[in-house]
Image 1 (cartoon, helix red, strand yellow):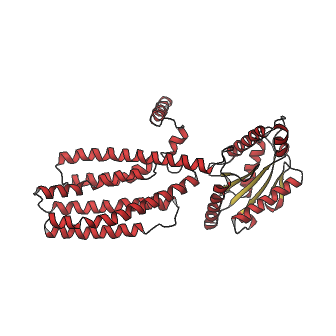
Image 2 (cartoon, rainbow, N blue to C red):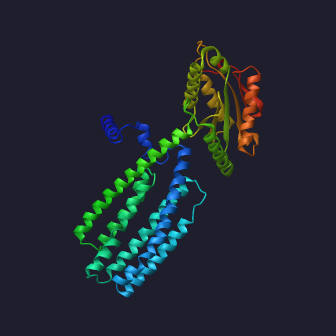
Image 3 (spheres, rainbow, N blue to C red):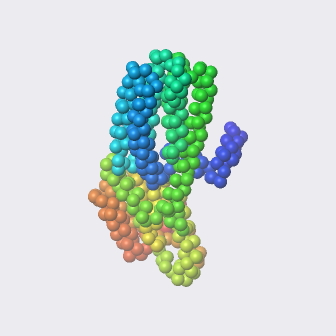
Length: 397
């Protein structure tokens, strides 16, 4: 098993050259991206869904005159009615999902975008099979209907998707094409149909890889623009946006949301005595220590010069106290003179503090941080202005 895992990792490292294993796995599962990347990805997917739907809403009925010229009137009218219904569905989709940035909504948008042409394909194929198509011009136009799944599968390449999403979205189109062959509705000879089936599968894989590449590129751009270059914590602009989203989500779901306002003690003295390079090192070490004790779903924001804000969704005051205790036990690194780097921390929680806005929640945590600072530093004050910890030495290892 270990040998097999080593081989898989080596293959992935070759295929995805220049990427870490964590970055590679982020491209396979849709739940591994950060909340901020997910929001940006959702907005991009939905905007492209609306654009593609609007394009198909216009192009789909434009083919009706061609059908009327090439096919006999009865078949052409059936196809025209089908095209009109598909166009209406595309129009409705193009007008939907405005203002949403939900991952689930984005996935549904993609599902509906692919469902419309899939249903069109499954209805039009048996319909065409009922009529004699012997004229070369008719055969050419009918073949165009046969290749509709290829167009839609190739369209997956314009969306930033993971490998799992690509497989789940492409499977219905591949299955629909296979079904027409099994039921004898294929418009191409069966041998050619099987060859086209294999080509469709390969195209789905290539389109998915292209979508994964888009997702990686987008994630890198979002990461660079949203993180503080020194500490790798989220910058304040992006952090506020994420905090607003987390607060709204917590309000809707009636779940706890905790904040820890962390201010490094006597940080100015490091810059004044040892220089800004040592100060930068202290900030990096503190940020690294904070990220280690926070969960994957938590958010670390560089709020100011030596101030950090840790956002902990679905965490009550007791859970926040445990996280801070872990941090104080692990430490924030060392000062240039060899002494431990400490911090004053204020903790607030949405439900316990009865806050109605994210600003109020931050103000509560900020106020408690200042109270901890004024009462001697290296302290933690939690909800209800309770002193949770007084010195790092008082926290058991």
